[in-house]
Image (cartoon, rainbow, N blue to C red; front, side, top):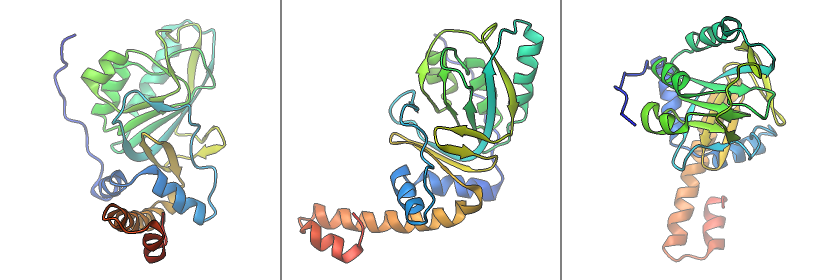
Length: 231
C-alpha cells in the first residue's frame, strides 16, 4: 500500500483551536466526573463505540449526521448528499453519525481524506466503517465506530441530513456540542457548558495529578484524598 501525499488540513479559528487544545490535554473520565457533579447525566456514548486502534483521541465541535436504511441504487441520489455533507465540514468539526443501521459501512477511505483536509478532527459512528488499512496508514483520521465491514451502502443505506440533532444511546448530540474521545470512550459536552466544564475538569485533573504524586511517593491513599479530595 503506497503512502498518500500529505495535504495540510484546514485549521479552526484561534478561539476554537484553543478550546480543542485544552480539551485535548484532558481525559473523558475527568470530564464525566465534572458533568456528574453538575447534574448533567447521560453524556457518555455507548461503550460499543471504540477507537479503530489504541492511541486514537481527539476533541472538537460536533457536526451530527443522520442516515437510514434504503434500497436506493442511484449513485446521484446516494452520493450527491454525501458530497454536500463533506463540503459542509468546517475546521474543528467532529462528524457524529447516527446511521440507524447496524449492517453496512457508513464511512470509508476517500471520505476520511476529504474530511481531514477540510479540518475535521475525528469521526464518531454509531455504526460501521470500511477501508481501515487506508484510514489508519494514509488519512490517519481518528475514528471511533461499532464495527468494520466491507459492505457498501448502495441499495442498503443513505444519508438523510447533516447539521441536525441526533441521539446515540441515551445522549442527544446537538450541532456545536463539544466532543472528547479517548480510549475510555466518547463524551459529548453541551455547547453552552463547554467552557465551564473545561475549566472545572482542568482543576479536577490538576488535583488528581497531585494525588497521584503523593501515592507514587508512598503516602497513604487516605492522606492524599483528605488533602485534595479527589480519587
